[in-house]
Every structure is written in C-alpha cells, then in structure tokens.
Amino acid sequence: MSTLYLVVVALAGLISGLLINLLATRLTSKRSLLGPLHCTRSSHPLTWWQALPLAGYLAQRGRCSTCGKWLAVSYPATELLTMGIFVSLFLLEGLGFRLLFHALYSTFLILVLVIDWKHRDIYFSVIAAGSIIGLAGSAVLPEVGIVSALIGAAVAGGFFLLAYLLAKLIFPKVEEPLGAGDVLLALMMGLMLGFPNIVGALLIGPLIAGATTILLLISRRSKLGDFIPYGVALCAASLLFLVNPAPFADALHLPALVAALSNIFGHS
Ligand SMILES: [Zn+2]
Image 1 (cartoon, helix red, strand yellow):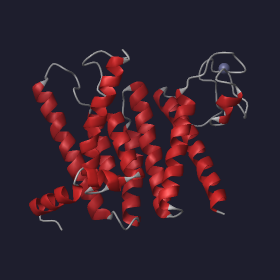
Image 2: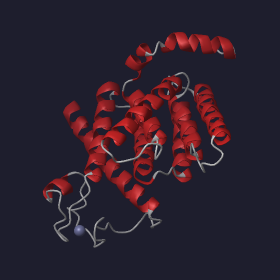
Image 3: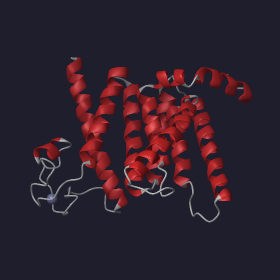
Image 4: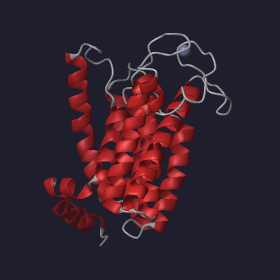
C-alpha cells in the first residue's frame, strides 16, 4: 500500500513541478495564467504528451519534436527537484496534514527560487499567497503554532528590513543593494518555518548565497558584484530545513541559541 502512496506523491510532485514552470513562465511574461500550453522555444501549441512533466522531455530526448529546437534543461530539472522533495517529505513524515502543508510550502519556495534565479525578481503575489498558506499551516501543525509563526516572521522580516535599510545607507548610489523582495521572502519563510527553525534557515542562507556566488564566478556566469542570489539561497535553506531540520539544528547548536534568545525576549 505504501508503494502506491509513494507513486501518488511522486506524481503529485511532478505535477507541482509542471505548475511551477507554468506559473514562473507566465507570471514573468505577463501572460494569462490559464489557456493552452505552448512551446517555450517557438510558441506553437503543444500536444498533451509533449507537455507531460519530465516524461515529455525524455520522450522528445530534449529536443522539441515539432520545431526541432533544444529544450531548456531547467524545466525537467525543476520537475525532478519538486518530485524529489515531495518524496523525501513523504518518507520522513508519512501521509497527513504535515506532508500536505510542507509540500505546499515547497511548491511556493521552489516557485520563488526559479523566478529569482531566472529573472532576479521576487513577486509580491507569490509571497502573499505563500504567506497565507504559511499562516494556515502554522495554525494547523502543532509543532509550529500561530505564535511561533508570527515570532518567526517578525524575527526574519525585521532582520532583513534592518539589512535592507543598512545596505541603502552604506551604498546610496546602488539602486537596490538588497531587494525589498528579500524582506518579504524572509517574512513568508518565518510564517512557514516558525521560531526557532527560521533562525537556522537565516544562518545557513548566507552560506548558500556565498557558495552559489563563488560557483557562478568560477563558471564565469557572472562578474563580481553582479548578482548575489539571496532569494535563491533563502529558498534553498528553507527547503533544507523542511526536509530535515534536526541535523541542522544540532550542527548549529540551535537549542542553546534558542534558550539564549528566549531569555532575551522573555519567551519560553
Ligand atoms: Zn517547439
């Protein structure tokens, strides 16, 4: 029976991945969210099997069978990533409300990640919808709770707002040294992860941003000071925490950190 569930969860992951690709493409090109699917290379309509997540790419061997152009690897990669995270969550958590909400959180986080990676932008509509889901999930899931979600949002949003204002003060000539979207993203993460998990994600985020920047520089895909993928890194850190919070908490000595913070805020 659990094999059947595993297959259903994997399929749900693939379909979510397809939706993420669709939303990312249409939101950023200001097209209607509804309507038939089109080839991303030549904008001709797709047949049903060409549009299948992952399988469509594999069946066409990476090359559109209508126009003959190479398809972007990022689309099947997104579908594969979403499926992998859904399956990991299922193996860790089993079926239930926790899996439902964590799968929804992952979908929003990967959507923000994909749009920020490709277009260096964070969309308010996506953050707003994700925040509502985060608040609803925290109310339902006993290990988070509304209070912890609101503290998490205040800590993360406040921290990034401070960083945003400081960056503006230090680099007055740069238009947006740190995006306002990063502040909103931190707020959404706080609502989803709650306090204290959000502290761990905020600590790991800059490490991932640094590592990604170095990789981009080495592969010569960007120049120094060109682009620091904060949004991408924050999403990746949140996904890591959703899939496996405990080892990170131990590695970061989070319990001690939380005890110290609880003393400061008088919250137990
Ligand atoms: Zn085509």
